[in-house]
Each structure stands twice: as C-alpha cells, then as structure tokens.
Length: 361
Image: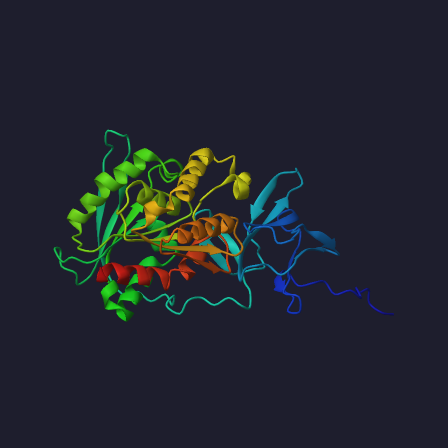
C-alpha cells in the first residue's frame, strides 16, 4: 500500500524571481498570523501584492518591478484580527532604515557601488555644534567632522548635510568621502552633519529655519571650519527641499547642491501627501521654485530620484524647469526607491563632481 503523500509540491518559503518574466513571487506560511499582503514603498507598477492561499502556503505575485532592490515587510492578521507588519523569516537579508529593519530582496540586476566595501578609508575628528534657540525660536545642532591630517585653520571645502547622522550611518557617507578623496585629493573636505530638532517643520521650507540656517548656523560653521570655496550641500526627501529652498531664498548660499529624492510636492503628482501637516507649505515653496528658477542661477544642482518612488515625477518636473531656465541642473534616475541605500548608490559621481567644482572655484 502506498504511503499517504501529497502529489503537489509545496513551494519553498521566501521570495524568488521568475527569470523569464522578471516578476517576483513571495511565499510564506501562517507562522505569526495569516499573511494578507506584502508591504513595500514603491510607486504603482501594476502590482497587486495580496497573498493567495496555495495548500498550506500563501503566495503573492507581482510583475517585474521598476527597481533592483525591494525592501519589504509582510502584513499579517492574528486570530483576534490585529494586523501587524513583520519581517519575512525566510529572507535572511535585511536592510536598516530610519523606520527599523526590513526584509530585503536584491534582484539579479543590482550591483552595489564598488567603493561600498565596508572599509574605513579615513579617520575623522568630530566636534559637537549647537546654535541655541534664537529670536525666531529655532535651534540647529549637529556634528562637525574633520578628516585626520587637516589642520585646524587649514581651509578646505565644507559639505553641509541635512539628516547628517543618518547619512553617515545608513548611507556610508563618510566612507564614501574618504574613498573619494583617495581618488580625487581636491575633494577632501570637512563635513557639517546637521540633525533636525523638528524635522517635519524645519525641513518643510520653513522661513524661520531657513533664516537661522543661512544667517546664523552656516556663518558660525565657516568660522569653526575655514573654507575659501563655495559651500556644497547634500540632502534627501524634505532635507533636499529645505536646501534648495534656502538657496532660492538666499541666492549664493551654496555653490552646489545634491538633492536626492526631494519632496518637491505639487498637487498634480502628490495629492496622496495631503495628510502631511506641512503639505501646503511645501507646495507653495515648490511653486516658487518653478516660478523663479533663475534665483538658483549661481548654484550647480544635481538631482537624483528612484525609478520606483513616488517623488520621481515631481523631481523630474522641477529639474527640467530649472534646466530650461539656463541653470546647471541635471537629474540622475536609479533603479530603487525612497531609502538611504538608494541615495548611497547615487552619491557618485554627482557629489564628487560638486566638491571638485567647489574646490576649483
């Protein structure tokens, strides 16, 4: 008598890529609750990431995504109806971000930049800086980083970074700068890592923050970190918007800005962001950039965005508008979403070119 066996093979747990279609199949079981869908932060690409039951397993199938990496979580519902986000236990790869760890699937086309080897190219000296609340009620704080071998009074370029500690930790910024300076010595720089006190308010094109940054913090930083070259700035999402807004408000503040996945909201593309408390404020600032792009004429602007992110359309529209006005502005599009690894992967060559241009000015 034959043993009682299933004639249908159960699919293996975990994500896999269909190499013919490029689609992705996520397979899981009911451990930790019934899976309902896969959560990831990507623009619509005709996907439906809900799970369908197959035997004792559940599958979610999506068409070929517009990215080479997917950071995701699994939405599960327990017996009481409580819904929670969870890591995929069958996917050992993880990505770390500002909202915690996510499961990670790297598709066959993904290649990390050659410099991101985990090597510490340089050592850095650090100094905590803080400009207390002024008459406008704004406080700005961060860390001034100086590469070993640069004397206290030696003038070198200064890079100003919004969300600075997160860029250093999650986008390997200091490692990149050390590697870059080994290849291009003229790009050796000090770095002002600014950390927001009230991010959503300050970075949403807030007039008080902009005034304090430009008229108080940056002059004091230049006193502590002598430089004879135009400042270069780096920021992502709202942090990118705040830097471009600062340059438009006070032309000549920066010689170059790398704006990554900037939150340049306009209703045409970003109606889904209306629940954001500062949405209207951001829209006004973005419309002002479109209306008067010539205010950015003295600054070199490098925009980056991901093919899989919702901010792609508004970044493309602004970059094209600024470039059409004769401003040196370009947009680089990567195959990723809205995350620090995506921004890390697009640091080079744009940031290196901005630092080299600043040093030569």
